[in-house]
Image (cartoon, rainbow, N blue to C red; front, side, top):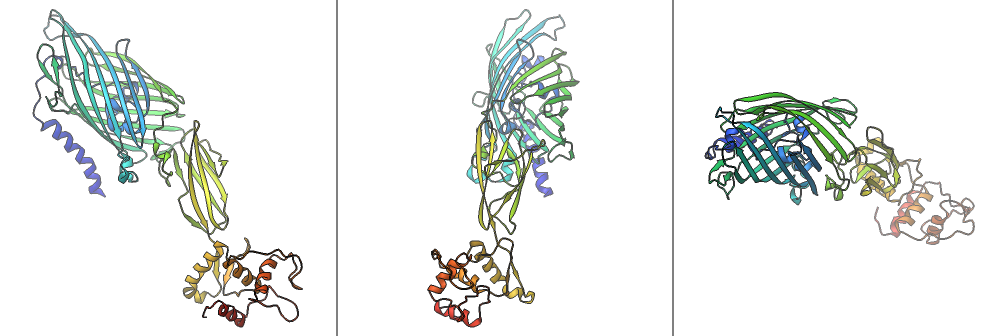
Amino acid sequence: MKSHLIFKIIFPSLVIFNLLFVIPAMPVYAQLGELGINPLQVEIGSRPLGMGGAFAGLADDMNAILYNPGGLAWAKGISLTLKNFEDITAVQAYPTGFGSSLGLAVSANRISDIPLRTGTGEVANSSSDVIFLSYGTKLTFIPALYKNPFFQRLGLGMNIKGLMGQTLRRTNQRDISATGWDVDLGVLWKGEEWWSAGVSLQNILPAETLGGGIIKWDSGEEEGIPAVGKLAASARVIGDIGSPIFMEGRELLLAGELNLFRSRSMLLRLGGEWNFGKRYYIRTGFMQQHKTKGISSDINFGIGIRLERWGIDLASYREPIQDQRWLVVSFLYFPKEWIVIRELDIEKPAVMIEKPIEMISLADNIVTYDDKIEVFGKVKPGVDVYINGLRAHVAPDNSFRVVVPLRLEKNLIVVEARYNGEKKVWKYKVLRKARVKIADQEKVKDLEKKREAVESLVTMGVIEITPEAEFVMEAGVTRGELASWLVRAAEMKLPEVKKDLFVDVPRDHPLAPYIKVVTDLKLLRPFPDGTFRPGAIVSKEEGEAIFAKFGVAR
C-alpha cells in the first residue's frame, strides 16, 4: 500500500523534471522575456487569485482550464473576469456526460507603461489575445473502466492554446506582432472526499513541433515559450462530510503549490478558503511571482458569494510587471440544465459512494429476515428523494431516513431522485425470508440444509405461516398445514366452499378450500366420527401413505 502511494507521488514529479530539464533548450527569450511576460500562461479568476494562485491541486471549477485541466472533468459553468475594461477573460466548462467536459476560454490582456531596461525612461505596451480549447475526462466513458473506483477519482486534461494576436509597442521603435501556440497537460487525483493532489504541465510542446512551442514575430524573430510544472495539493480540513474535523455548515479549505521552471527560480504558493452557510466565502493566500528582477511575494485577499445558479467573486492581488495592486471581479453562472455527474443516468448510486445521491444504505439483492428495512442516506443540496412513490423528508444536513415495510418473497424498492425538473429512478430488489427455528439443537448440523430448504418454501408461500408466528422444525406438521402445502406445491386452483365440510371445518375456516381439495382427491381422509381434525399432527403412517402416492421413497 505504501509503495503504491509513493509511486503516485513520485511518478508525476519525474515526469515534470523530465519535461523541464531533459527536453532540448528552446530559443532564448527575445522581446517578451525581457519584460517578464508569458502570454500563454494566463493566471486569472478571482477565486484562484484570492487563494494566492494555489489552485492546481484543487481545480474544482471552470478555472481549472487555466490552472490544471485535469480538474475539468468535475467542473461546469461560465465565468467572466474583469481586471479593467481592457483585461477580460471568459471561461466555460461544459459537461458532456460520463465524467467528461469540454472547456473554452478567451483572454484579452493589456499591460501598459512597462519600464524598459535602457534607463532612459522608455516604456513598452503589450496586448495579447489567447484562446484555450480544453478537454477533461475521468476515462469512465471506456466500458472496461467505468466501474473501476480508481478511474472515478482520476482526472486527465489537455489544453490546446493559441496566441491569436500579440502586439508589442515600444518607445521610438516600430510596433511588432506575433502568433504562436502550445499545449498543457493536467492530472488531478481525488484521493478521498476531503483531499486531492494535482500535477499541471504548461507549455510543454517542444519548439517547432507542428509549428508550435514558439512565438513567431512578424519581424522574423522567434521566441521560446517557457515551460512550467506545478505540483499541488488541497485539503478540506473542516467540513460536513468525510473531513478530518466535522463542523456543520462550515468548511476550511487549504491549498499549496510549487511552480517549477527550467531556468528560473521555483515559486511557492499557499492559499485558504473559509466557507460558511455554503454561500459566503472568505479567501486569502501567499503568492510568489516572477518579475523583471527577482521574485515578488505578496498576500492576496478575496471574498465570494454563491446563489443557486449565480455567484460573484472579488480578489485583490499584485501584478508584478507593473508592480501595482489590482482588484478583479468574476461573475459566475451555473446553468441548471448542465449536469456534472452523468453516471446517474445509467448507474445506481452505490453504497457510501459519492453521487448526487451522496450515499444510500441500499444495495441490490439484499436478503433479510426482518419485516421492514430502514433506508437512509444523504443527497446533494436541492435533490428530493422519493421512496416507493412517497417523498422522503430531507433534513437540513441533506440526510434522509425512511422505514419501508416488507412482505415475504421479493420486494421492490423504487428510489427516485428529482432535481430541477429531472427525475432519475433506481430499483433495488430485497428478499424477505421466513425465519425457521430448529427445535432440537442437537440436530442442528444435520438439519441446517433442510432448514434452508424449508425457509425457501415458506418464503415462496408453499408453506404458509402467520406473520407473527415462527416455523419450528421438528415440531410436527398438522393435517391442516399439510393440506395447504400439498395444494400450494401442486399449484391447484382453490374451489369455492359453499357449505360446512366437517364438524370441525366450517365453510368459513381459513383452510377449508385446501381441505376440500385434498379430501376430494383422497390424499387425506376424515376420521370415522365425521371430523377432519386440522390441528392434529400427521401420523407416520399418513405421511408415508401420501409420499407413496407421489412415488417418493422415504
